[in-house]
Image (cartoon, rainbow over all chains, first blue to last red; front, side, top):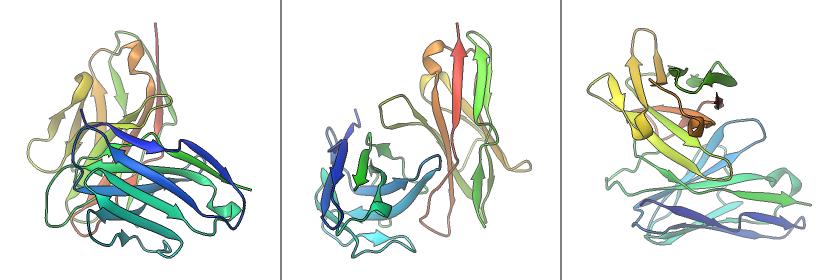
Length: 122
Length: 113
């Protein structure tokens, strides 16, 4: 149990276009989903936390107008990279938590990670 | 600044031998600590976590970790390594003050038969 999928697994796009990445919890309802970005040879960086039906909470330094997050249901969250540029090229990973709390926390909730999406912007 | 360190890029052990993957942390307040494993072409999988309670935490696949406050460490251990344990291991940490989860850089574990 606790499987999380991401689609697509790999995407190449032209500079200036927008790309949508889907994150789905396949066998459980995810109260909270987290989005991470991984730079080459570096650790994951938390970008934002999203709860179903409410606005995402972005980490400091992450442009919310650049990285649009929608959490439409308890099994689906999407990350849209708007007007992508080559510097947005990265590995994006989502995770989902099924722990119910008034304040979801990336640093305490057990998370189940998706396999990641490789974005290359030309 | 808060940080989580995994001092070893790679750990090599023979099958059947005990293994240790090291993690040290520097966070303000009470730390929350996790270990995740990433197998090739798969997402991160949860192994275990420490939030409060017993310092020795037992997790999936026979792994355990000991929270040592004086040494600010949370080393991952297993008494007898398997070849199938070969993977990339991440230590993660945070504290009660914020939502940010800090990842260690990862340690590649290679178990030889």
